[in-house]
Image 1: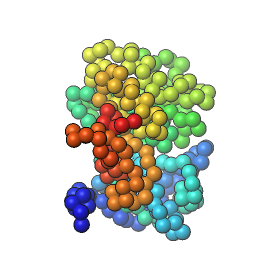
Image 2: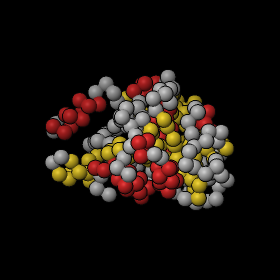
Image 3: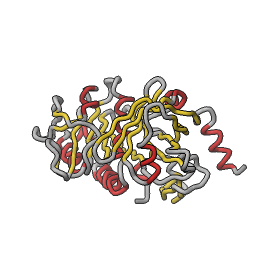
Image 4: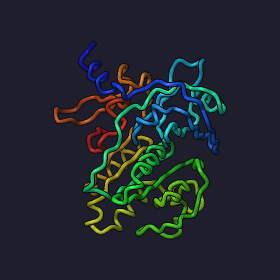
Length: 295
């Protein structure tokens, strides 16, 4: 056993589980999007915002699929995904009562800094789930001031709702919000290039720039950005954070084979104190300091 393998084994000891998860609810949305609630008590207890699961889609497929965790309960997890490939198509055919194998929770979680209590969440497409999980984690502590900007170029996987929570620096006609966040009293705004009612006509980073520019310098200095979405979006988020000298953590999306660090098939180039190095998105991430990634 190599030293790297031994280190991984120690890291995941008593924190990584394989369990048969029963599907207890399924919600379908336009654009072939699905939210499945899976009974997985061990994973639910250990999961942290930013971690993900590796799920078996069907007995006919040997390879699992990595899915971000969107919410957790006492004994369940929610995953949101869009059909992409045969594996997720088979998973989408599962019904309530069907059982899937769940490996998780995997990966590093987001970390917070009390010196930066103004939390800006940026989620694009299937990058929305980790932002919801982080919002759920922080929402009961009044020390955090949370604002979420979510974008999609296909219909959102929820009904759009006009927000009743005003956001300084955001025009009043940009009013569409995510109902779940609205219920949690967390302000959110939606962006798209598809002309959806009440949405900002542009990218999440463009609306984020408007909001950041509206802040007093003292408040902007307290902002930390957290983001998940496609790589071009995350690079734009990293550039935005660098422009304003803001702390920024991103959760990377990557194809994975084993998802436990053995195959090294999901590596990304990052800057380290010892120079550039390849890091595995599955276990060294998926959360990274945006400034450390060689985009």
